[in-house]
Image 1 (cartoon, rainbow, N blue to C red):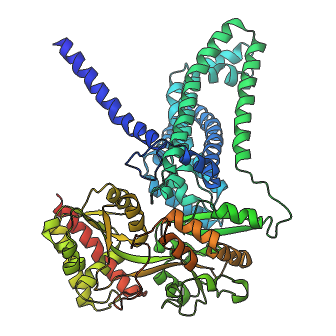
Image 2 (image 1 turned 120 degrees about the horizontal axis):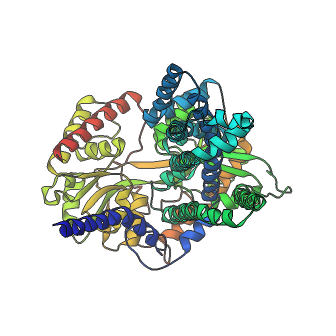
Image 3 (image 1 turned 90 degrees about the vertical axis):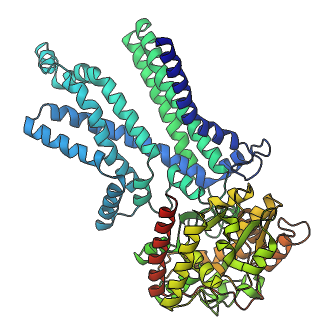
Length: 632
C-alpha cells in the first residue's frame, strides 16, 4: 500500500510539473518559429529574436522593468526592514495597529490600489511616467518586506541588542552586527518577493504610467492583442534572465560560505565589493540600453513626438526610420479601444498624434478636441486612394489623414462552408444551425450590432429603438442556438488553423488568414457592411504639431505605407502600395480581403451618436450574459 501511495505521489508530481512547465516549453519552442503563427511550427528561425533586439520599444521596456524592480527592491527592503525593527520596539497597541495597516495593501484588490495611486498622482498634478511607476512599486513592495521580516524579529531574544550594547557595542553596531545578521533570511525573502512582485506587476503599472513608459507586462499585453511572435522571444528572454538570477541566488551563498572559511574579513569584503561592482555593471548596461545617441545636424534633433495608437498597429521600421530621418524621438503609447483613447484625451493628456476610428474622429471634431491640419505642411494627400478620402466623418479631410481602412466580413473555411449558403443567407448564416458550435463572433458591440442590423435589412447607423431591439433579439437567438465562441484577435490564428467554420472578422485580419491558409475565404454580404477607416489626427493640445505633420507625411509616403501594410496586414490608403501588395507577386496577390469593396451602396461608415452608443453597449452586455447562460 505504501509503495502504491509513493508511486501515485510521483505520478501526481510529474503531472503537476508538466502542467506548469509545458506551456513555458511550448512558448520557448515557438519563439524560434519561422512564421507568424502562434500555433503552427513551420521551421526554425531567429527572426523574432532579431526583431526583438532591433525594437527600441521592447528593449526600453526591458530596461524599465528591471531598473524599476532593482531600485524598488533595494529601497523597499531597506525601508521595510527598518520599519519592522522599529515596530518590534514599539508599544503593543501601536504594533498591532500598524500590522493591520500593513496588511491592508496586501489584501486590497490590486485594481483598487492602482486607481488609488492614479488619483493620487492626478490630484497632486504629478506627471505620470517612470518616476510615478517607481514610487508606486516601492509603495506596494514595502508591506511584503515587512511581512517577511517581522516573523524573524519575533523569533529573536528581545534582550539581544541590550546584551550587545552591554558588551560595548554602539546602538548602530548592535543593529548592523547583531540584529541584521540574525534576520538576514527574512530580509532576503522579503527582497525576493519585492523583486518578483515588481517584475510581475501589470495592473498598478498600467494605471500609474504615462509618457510612453512601459514595463514588460504592459508591452506583452499590447503585443498580445494581435499576432506577433516576438512576444514569445521577449518572454523567453525574461525566463532566461529570471533563471540566471535564481541560479545565482542559490549558488552565491554556497560559494560565499566556502570562501568565508578560507578568507579573512578583508577577503570577504573584497568578494562583496566584487559582487557590488558586477551589479553596478549590469545596471549600467540596462541604463545604457535605454539611452539614445542622436545626430545634432538633423532638423528635429532633441524633439519628442508623442503618438497614441492601437497596439501592434505599426510597421517594423517606421519609428526607427522616422527617428533616423528627423533626429526626433518617438514615444508610442497604445490603447485597446477608441473609448479608452477618448478618456485620456478628454482628461487633458497631451499627444501629438492620435489614430482613432471614423466615428470617434467625428466625436473629437464635434467636441473641439482636434486642430485642423495645415495643408501647406502636408505633401501626401495626392498619394492616397480616392475611395478613402472625403468620408462622412471628415468630408474635406480638414482634420484627418487615413492610416488604414477596410471592411468587416465573414472569414470561412471553403472546405466546410457552402458558398451558396453565404450568397443566399449573408450574415444570417450565423443563424444557420448547420454550423452550430462552429462559429466565432467578434467581441465588439459595434460590429456585432452592425452584422445583426444588416442581416435584418436595416442601416447600421439606425437610431430607431425598435430596430435596435430586433437586432438584439437576432443576436440573442444566435448565442442561444448556435453556441458561438465570442473572441477578439485570437480568432486570427485560430482561423489560420481552421478551428472553426466561419467568423466575423476585419478584412485586414482576413487577408492575413488567407495568406497563411489557402483553404480560407472572405465574403461580404450584398446587404452591406461597415466600411471603416482609422486615421491620423492632431489633438488641439498637441505640443509639437510641426513634427506631427512630418510624421503623417512619413507614414503616408511609399516606404512608410508599404512597411505598415505589409507588416500589419491592413489595407494601405496609399494607392501605389495598395496596387503593389495586391498585384502580381505582391504579398496579397489574389486575396480579395485586402482590397476593400467600394461599389456597394449598402456599405456604410459609422456615424457617432452617443445615445445610440449607450443603448447598444447596454444591449451587448445582455447578449454576452445570454451567451454565458447558454453555455452553462
